[in-house]
Length: 94
Image (cartoon, rainbow, N blue to C red; front, side, top):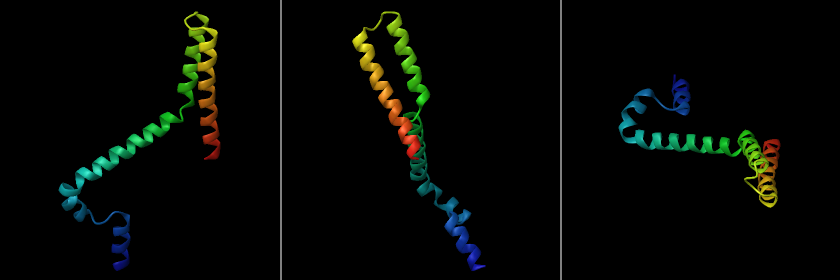
């Protein structure tokens, strides 16, 4: 019986303890959970190739419509491609 109780405590504690401690620990736990979700979302967005590919297409359209000159296009294209390469390299390392 002691082993079962020890396993439950390692997995997150007793339900009764969690319920009684919620008024005190609930807010910090929720803040931690929200912060963790925000970090996960930021990491996913940071490694989103599709978003950068969309920016590249948008840049190409601006260039073709004459909204951006050769120098601006080349500079922005280089920056986007460098970021895409960095994302792909980071994904390979995982």
